[in-house]
Amino acid sequence: MTLAEKIMAAHANKKRVKPGDFINVRVDLVMANDITAPIAIKEFQRIGVKRVFDRNKVVMVPDHFVPNKDVASAEQAKLMREFALKQKIVYFEVGQMGIEHVLLPEQGLVLPGDLVIGADSHTCTYGALGAFATGMGSTDIAAAMATGDIWMKVPPTMKLIYHGTPGEWVSGKDLILYTIGQIGVDGALYSAMEFTGEAIDALSMDSRFTMANMAIEAGAKAGLFRVDNKTQLYVKPKAQRSYLVYEPDDDAEYSKVIEYDISAIEPQVTLPHSPANARPVSQAGNVEIDQVVIGSCTNGRIEDLRIAAHILKGKSVHPGVRCIVIPGSQQVYLDALAEGLLETFIRAGAVVSTPTCGPCLGGHMGVLADGERCISTTNRNFVGRMGSPKSEVYLANPAVAAASAVMGKIASPNELS
Image 1 (cartoon, one colour):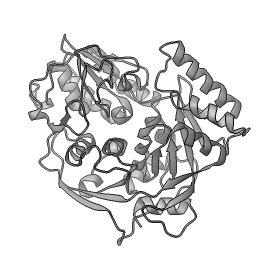
Image 2 (spheres, one colour):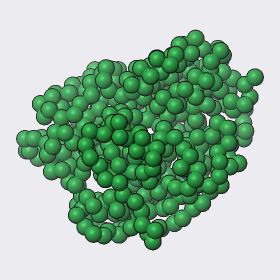
Image 3 (spheres, one colour):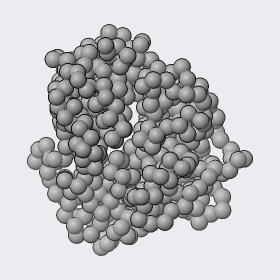
Image 4 (cartoon, helix red, strand yellow):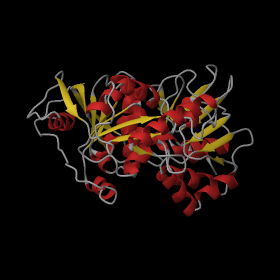
C-alpha cells in the first residue's frame, strides 16, 4: 500500500484498502474555522447530540475574519466561541490564535500517522508531517464532531519524485507551483500526492508545509511526505501524545509516477487567474504592482519571514506599493519580533498585521480595488480572490514577493543591486 492507503487502512481497522473503496475511518482531529464552523455547529445541534465525541479532538480556530472586520463576522465568531466554551473543546481566541494550518502543527495537535479532517480545503497542509489530512464540507464536519468517524473514498496515489539541487531562491513554493504548472489544476484530481526524492529530503519543514498546502490546487485530496529525521525533530518537542509512523510499501501501486529534475528551475510566478499559469520569474514580463502580501497558511511561517526580511533589510518598499506582512501565528510573530524581523519590515515601509487569513480570501487587511495588481505568497489567484473581479493576483515565494515590493514590479531577488 501507499502511504495514504496505510494510514487509511489503520484508521478503518482493515488490513488492506485499495483506491475506490468506501470506508468508515476514525478521525484523530476535526477542525473548523470562523467561516465554516457556524454551519457545522447548526447542523450538529440539529442532529440532537449533546456533546462532541471527544473534546480534545475537536479544534476551532477563528482566523479568516478576525479580529472581526464587521458585524456579520463578529456574529460568526460569537457563535463559534459560545459553542466552543460550552463544549469545552480546543479553541484559540484572538491573542492565542494564528492561521489554522500554521497553528495546529506548531501546537503539536497534528502528528505523524494521524487522520485529520477540517472544514477548510487547505487542511491537506498537515501531510507534511506524514498525516492523511483533507478538507470536507461543514455538514460532514458536524457528523464527525458527533460520532468521531467519517466515510471516505480511498483515493489513488500519484508519486512525484524530485531530483537535483534547487537553485538560489528556489523553495518548496516554487516546486509546487512548477508541478501545478506541469500537471494542471486537475492533474491530481481526487488523488493523494506522495512527494519524494532527494530534493524533497533536502527541503525544510516550512517548505514541506507549503508544498502539502497547495496539493489541493492540483485537485488532490491530500499531499503527503514520508516522516524522516527532520519531521521527528520538528514533532517530538511539540507532541503531547504518542503517534505512529507509516511507510509506503516498496511494492505499492501508484496511479502515476512523475519525475522532475529541479536543478534548473527558477523561482516561479503564477499569472492570473489560475494556479496552473506558472512560469519562471524571468519570463513574468514587465508587470507593475500595487500590493504585496507576505503571509498566509502557505507562506506565513518564520522561515518565510526571514527570507523576506533578508531581501528588505536596508531597502525601501517602492512608493507606489503597499507591502503587507502577516505572521502565521502568535509564535511566528514573537519569533520575528525577537529576531528583529518586524523592525526590518517596518523600517522598509511595510505594515505588519496580527495573524489572520485576511487578504488571501479577499476578507480584509488588503482587499484589492478594480484594476489593481498584487503579488502574493498565498495559494490562489482566481478571479476576485483578493477583492475586485477586475483585480489580478500573482503567486510567488517570499523572496520574489519581497524583491517585487522594492522594485514596484514583479522581480527576482537577483535584480536588486
